[in-house]
Image 1 (spheres, protein in one colour):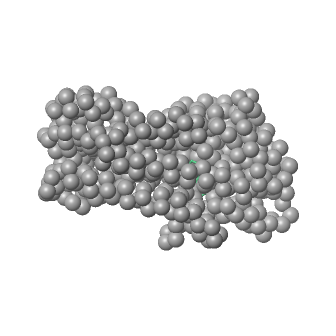
Image 2: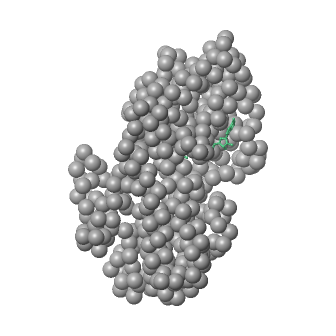
Image 3: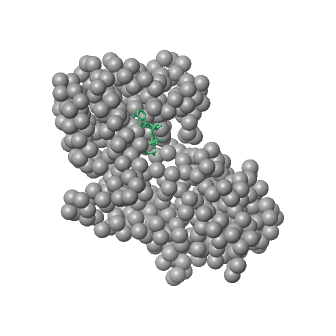
Length: 434
Ligand code: NAI
C-alpha cells in the first residue's frame, strides 16, 4: 500500500509515521519548505514524545519520506489523507475550510489511477460532500472516492493513541473506499479495535460530538469545583464518587483553569455554528463555550486578587504555559488569556515551561522565561501552576518557599498536596479543594 499524507502538522506527521510503522509506504507532504527540509534532516517541527525515534526508524527503513511535491506524492498512491489545519475562521467562528478545499483540488488534479481521498482533518458535517463536488469539478473523469476518517489522537500521547485507539471511524460512500481503509488499518484488527464504517455525515459529526462532549465534561467539573470551594467539599472526592458510576466514567473530571488547545475551543465553536445554521442549536455547547471563556478571565482575576490591592510591580512565577503537559502546542492555551492580563495589570511575569519552543512568540514580549521551575519562582511574590507537567509534582515545597520572596501559591491544576504546602509555610490555594 502507498499513501500520501497532506500536512506535516501534529496529526499528519504522527499519522504518517504510524502508518509507515504499519508497513505502508508513506509520503508526507507540506507546503512549508522549512518544515520539510528540517524533517529530512531529522529535526521534528513539534514536540511529541517518541515521534523522533519513530520517524527516524521508518525513514531508515525506506517507508517514510518527506516532500513539498504534492503531485509526485499523489502519483501511484492508493489513498491520500488530508491532514491540513481547520482553524477558526475569523469573524464568524466557523471552521476555515480553505486549506482542505485547496488541498482536495490539488490532489484531484494530480491523481492518476484510482484513489481514495480521505479527510483526516476535523471538518464540519457536509464537508465531505463539498469535497466530492470539488473533485468532480476539477476532474469529472477521475476515479476518486471521497471518505472521512476523523482522528482522535491526543497530543502528548499521540503515537499510543494512533496505534491503540478506542475505535477507528470511517465515513464511506462506496466499497472501494471501505476496502482500502480497512486494509490500511489492518494491524488494528489484531488488537480487536472496533472499526465503525458509517456515512460521511455521521463520521464528520462523531468527531465534533465527541470533542464537544469532553469539553462539556471538563466545564461541568470546573463549575462543580467552584461550588466545592463555596461549600467546603473536595472536588476530587466528588469526581471520584461520580466517576465510579460506569455511566459517567472517571476520565475528564479533573478541574483546572479552563480547557484550551488546538481542538476543543475551535471544534466546540464550529459545532455551535453548524448547529445554528442547521436550525438545531446546541445550547449546552454554546453555554460551555461561554463558561470556559469566562473561566480563563476569572483565573487571571483570581491571581491578581491574590497579589493584594496593588499588583503593579509584584512578581509572579508561572509554571507551565503550554495548553497541557507533554506538548509544545500553545494554541488557545489558557496562558494566552491569563498572562497578558497579568502583564496589563503591571505584574512582572517570569514563566517556565519544559517545552517553551512555541511559547516565546505566542506570549507578550514582557513575559520573561526562566530555565527551571525554581528559577521562575526565585524572588516571586506568588507562584502559579498553569500546566501540570510531571516535574512540578516532584518540587519540594520547602525549596519552593525558600526560592520565593512571598508565600502565595495558586495551584490551578491541583498538582500539590495542600497539607504539605501549608506545612512549608505556603499560603496555598487550589481548585475546588477546602
Ligand atoms: P497543524 O497546523 O499542526 O498542521 C497542518 C499542516 O498542514 C501545516 O504544516 C501546514 O503547513 C500544512 N498544509 C496546509 N495546507 C497544505 C497544502 N495545501 N498542502 C500541504 N500541506 C499543507 O494542524 P494539526 O494540529 O495537525 O491539525 C490538523 C487537523 O487535524 C485539524 O483539522 C485538527 O482539528 C485535526 N486534529 C488535530 C488534533 C491535534 O491534537 N492537533 C487531534 C485530532 C484532530
